[in-house]
Image (cartoon, rainbow, N blue to C red; front, top):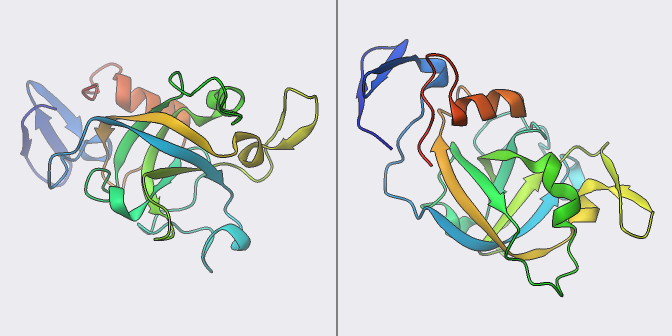
Length: 189
């Protein structure tokens, strides 16, 4: 990621590009590892799978199932809130029975906005809509979080950062922020 200079409350300069603060990537406090294999699971914003405030993430953001991911506590320095990640399941062992390939199209990019129970390590938990069902290979329909299951060996890749007060609301908006469009700065990969 390039050098950032804060110009004021409404804009940020990066290189020769001036971008609105609402789309401004934010550099992490400490360097982060750019990619790493982890276990990937999924959850729904319901009381049985979260704390007593299922519609609010640990960062204070709304639990948006299109954007949010949680990380285990041991990954907090590598993946601070506001980190945008991409998940790659191409290295999953062939004998792994997780449903990553089925769920991958609805995962897209994710923003780390939540944290997991301290009993988990080296794990990313993707928030999915509790209303989304997918068809498994055996033809049965299940909630997408259940179809994903527990996927070991998925690699996350950091693709950028976003101010936690200005998280995009849709995958399309998040992709535009990552890839850039018009005068918007594309985040480094």
